[in-house]
Image 1 (cartoon, one colour):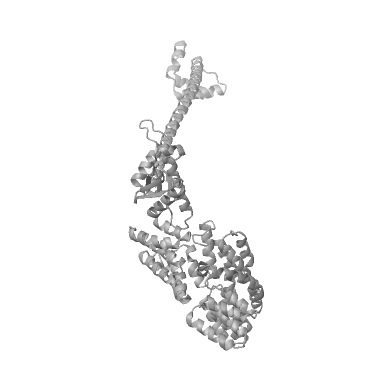
Image 2: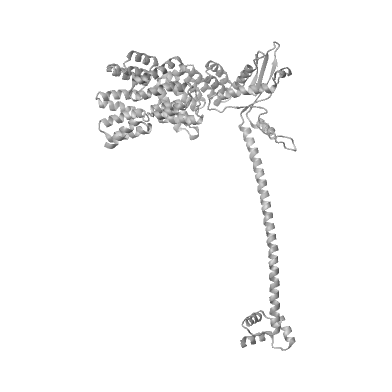
Length: 616
């Protein structure tokens, strides 16, 4: 260590005495200080001046360390305060942004509601003070008109959205703005008045000189009209006034309401004037559609078809009229015309842009005419979901869905939908007779089908509207009569129902079973002349040919039936059965597989399919 000590001394200087020691630390070189610290650590004795200097430096470091620690605490506190302040500023900004967003969204909703508003706003009516003692005020009269309007709207089955009915005070939400005193309800009304499509209705009630009452109603696009009655006839007057308002503000809905209410004569009297007053082709198209429905309900199918075509001409996307035209063509011009119209409907629906295609529920008529039972089932199920099971038509959906399941040989599902249908509804009562008959005929029990079909036949004969809705179902009774030997009754039924494909098919079947094959052949030939594209005659004649061993003719007829109605399991299975009988198992299996898609619950079909699969 002598060399290091010497180095330290060299650095510090070689002076001796106190003066040298006192002055030595002043110019201490950092390297010398480091060497001194090292020398002390190794036990070397340092000069007193250097010892004092090192002690001073140690104390200085301690003081600085304490100062830095205190300063760190102050800096951390300041930093926390700054972070809190920034967060508070950010929170206030977010809150302000959210507040303006909510306010803007609320205003946007109010503007949207205003732009899309289509309400009948019933203002308080004027009423004489003399009637106040009887509790008849202007507000009471307006409320009566409002109630009557709501009943009319609720009773109207239509796919077109009706105007809402409300009173002038029904949406008065009072949230005052202090500076102006304007409420949110008043702002909403101002926006609706500026941008909406509301119909404002008002009126007055006065006593006549004879002591009766006279109610006058008027409104936007509703010319004033007065209705008079006895002093106790206020309810009748408000109902008349409401019908007048409804007819002028919502002519299409009112026309549908009249038809639904079986007031077809009133509908036919009202619609021509409403059609002439309509402002757009779209409105005229809808009124023409209602016009056709009114003619349909009056059993004037040819005139109905004319109006449906007018509706389609005015609006090519009026799929409701296209569907109704199919049924009208069937009644007026025969099933073949309806079949062709159905094919055109489905072709145009497939070719239309997606936004213009018909809703699934509107495909029921073309599906029914082409005997596409899976499509018919899907359309009616969709309509039931859309209308909460009621359906935007005269008949509720449940019983019609049940009948489709019965035709698809699924009695369990048919029974389920019948059980959930309104037992008091007319359609439910009719299907309650038809479905057991289908099941009986399906199991080869024509005698079991007679009683329910006779009940259906009795209702059918009494009601022309049932004849329109169920044009050929009566022929089932002719079939049941014929197969049980009641040939005279069968002939009477076939003659009364008319020239429908199923009737020709069943009539020929009855004649063949009675032993008169030539007569059966003539009936079938006539039926094919009238309706060459319907499957039933091909099925019945093909089965007859198969029973008689004429397999070539049977294959021609049954393959034609399957091609004409590829989604009708009865037609496809009949063809598959013939192929299986001839030992053409692979071909038969392909046809059975196709049929299963159209009648997945048909037990007999599955048995035949499994047998073919085992041999294919």
